[in-house]
Amino acid sequence: MVAIILGWNPRLGNDWNYEAVIEQVAETGQFLERWNIGRHRKIQPGNQAWLLLQGEGQHGRGLIGHGVVMSESYEAPQRTEPKSSARYVSVSFDAVLPLGSQIPSSVLTSEVPDVAWNTFRGSGRSLPAESEPGLQRLWREHGPAASEPCRIVPGTYPEEAVSRIDTNRYERDPEARRVCLAFHGTSCAACSFSFEVSYGDIGKDYIHVHHVVPVSQLGGNYRLDPIADLVPLCANCHAMAHRGVGNPRTVAELRRAIAAAGHLPGQILDDRALTAQDDAHRILEQH
Ligand SMILES: [Zn+2]
Ligand SMILES: [Zn+2]
Image (cartoon, rainbow, N blue to C red; front, side, top):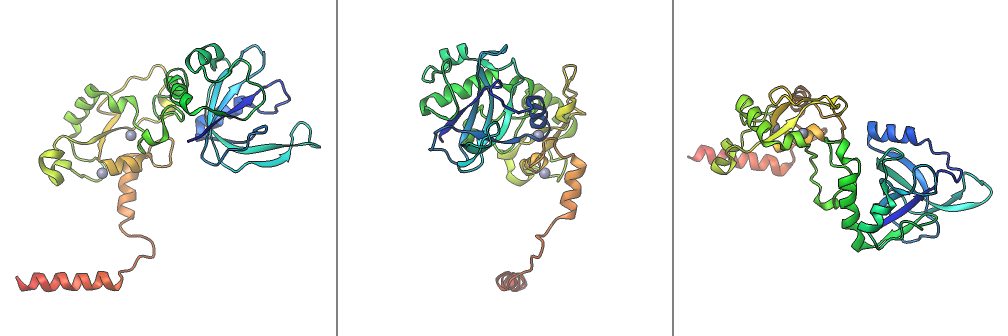
């Protein structure tokens, strides 16, 4: 997947309220903004976008954000000079660092030498494909991951490597898991599914452990209580607990959802299903 580097020079008349951007990304997981891509043309929806803080301001240069390109490129009036136009794409920024916490260009230059980080001007340049793993590793080690244990921070892994279920480090802690399962058992707390009952030996002791505490409560003083804060969930319920929400659904919410569901809206049995049912009755009666 092609990635693009976008430049941000706060002194060049940018009206971005960066504090508000950080806040919104923390709350909702994204901030949508159109971004100048200079003369860059080879950019498409789905491309990764890396945001480079530029200028010789008090904070210095450095890698400060990550996002995903959401649109084809388009021509639009410039914010600062509405009479002239420039080339833009819409970017969904999904991980941003506070000013001052960016990965400095000295580090970028030594770890990802194929890009001229120190002299990069303007906005919109391809990141060489061979530089991508190095940049992802840097972002993993120095980016927002350290302060956000509860989700896999966008940009830290190749997309295809990221599981659809974001587990956090509490869910992966083997000792906490042991204590949780010793208390709660290994059946799903939401739907009672047991891997051992369904799969026999190969399912024995298999269950996900899910961390129920909202991200907002994980301050510096947070101490995990493996019995109160972790519950066993099957893989399906675990996926549904996290699907589309920043703060996971509670076990009670999952149970309510399961109870209220059971059929697809508007679903009726078609002829084939009815025939199959009749066949089944017939076969059962024969024996
Ligand atoms: Zn379940
Ligand atoms: Zn979970």
